[in-house]
Image (cartoon, rainbow, N blue to C red; front, top):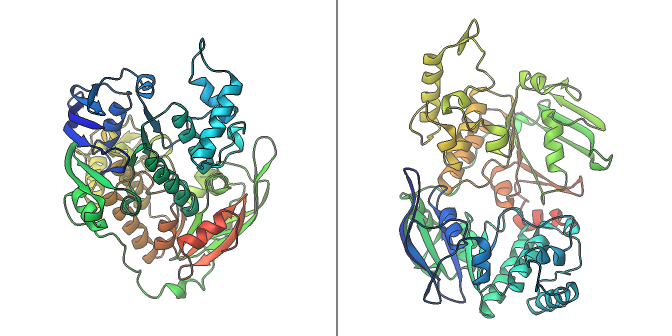
Length: 501
């Protein structure tokens, strides 16, 4: 596959600027870059979701033009998205049949037979008659790959495929991809995880500011080389150890105490059962595991967004089990939610308004019900500078921010409230390298200043690097607890799969 001088603009924003990229056949090819670098736009043009303004796409040396993903699929181009697009109430085979149209489509039996054969030939381990709802995240991903093979895809694009996979699931996925290339499929991998790029890809294209800045064999590069190409400068890849003296804080009473917590869904099914843990000043406790094993329900219970079926939650020694969100906030709970766009920000408001959200009625920002805009903008300018938010200024639209800068706004707002306990949920998910380092550095600094932090993350490397202790969730319970010195990605991954560490 080639792109030749491919360009795409959205209004005054030039998302892709004359990108000429070559993806050799039968290889795993990485496309990397910071958020806003143009990766998504480029792949959406290749997949037929966007029409290019200029340039062309070539498959096997021949120019092609796609008006839709269906056109792309008919030409052998398939894409597995970060979030599964499969219909959970249907089987794998039924999901494939949805894309076949009506008249002239093969029978259900023929589809099942072909899917079974493809699954066996490519060692995917997917039973096509299985309901999607019963599949793990990793198996759903393989089911989508199976669907692509059914449509005879010769070019397979995967967007951040390992975001919620355990190490063992990710390793199995890469084995599948390597096997596919040996059978003639070309794979394009879009990812922020540079270790994966170095481990499994043959070549890498680096985008920055909408331009292609490098295209190299992966074997010629190291992690710092990739970061330098992506960011345009050297960025430290690890956050230094914390200051000493933290162990003394462990003897104090916990800032957050959870005892025998149980949470059930609308049907009365317990999604969390008998979960207990403490978090003290100057400590980062990570909660991790495969998505869907109770972490989200624990977060909702801690914040006050979901009632608990049993158990006690104490914040600063105060029982808040039945308390409102506002009461918990008043007692010093800071909250960085999982979705910055739907939960963390009001994207239609200005950056300054989002930075004071939740404290906009305080005397510093309002007097007798009237906003003090000069003070608000001055405060926002200081936060923008301190947290290195790349924006046109306090009055700029939040919707114009890249993912990393939008996340920095959420972090800056919560930190400015000086919480006693901070709940950070997937704080670096979908965030580029530079922003990830900045956010992790902020969490470490807050911990060293004595704030208790609960870090909810599906990134096992992040859990190992940042936390003092890690709790691994499996099937709504704590499957195990590991200290910083004994926690490894392999041990955490085993616990997340319900195995012994």
